[in-house]
Length: 209
Image 1 (tube, helix red, strand yellow):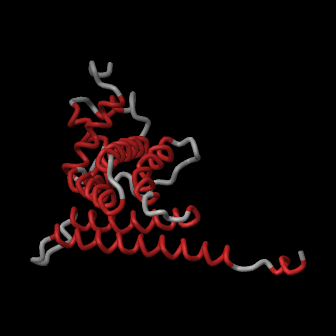
Image 2 (spheres, helix red, strand yellow):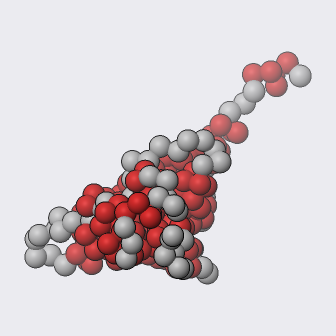
Image 3 (cartoon, one colour):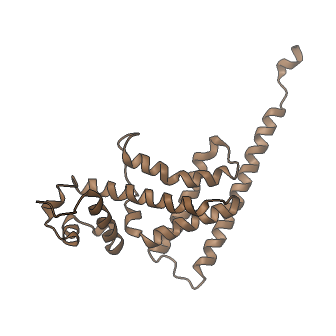
């Protein structure tokens, strides 16, 4: 019989906490069973497999990160919103490195996959930030990938102890935010100029009307 009060949600939260402590790659069903006080076979009454556990942890992490970032950017715009979003993501990665690692390298099975839905929610706050920069719709995916890559990379490097020089990491993070802010403003200006130029070109057919 399953332990009283033990369900899938409880197991996933326990697994996420354990992953944060020991590293996602070290998380096994055996270690998780020990954490929640049951034998490993009992977990399979609630979780189908190690892969199922992986995907559930990732969905939890996406949702938690989306909540944290969404709350951080409320009432903000421009660089302030960018800094708030980047800072919230960085804080989440540093506080929850194991569960964040679970979000990487997953292949959604389709548009209704919980991972797909959770990932879309996770990226939503950054879309809101970029809309504040007037990024052209056709450039939004590129901008999202660029911003995600930059701030994911910084946070992941910091979480893994990748910054060893004496220069303050917080100062480097502010430098990065300024750099991205300037880049986004320049990109928005370029897109706007391109649209204006295209509308200013005379239609040759006008000469025959």
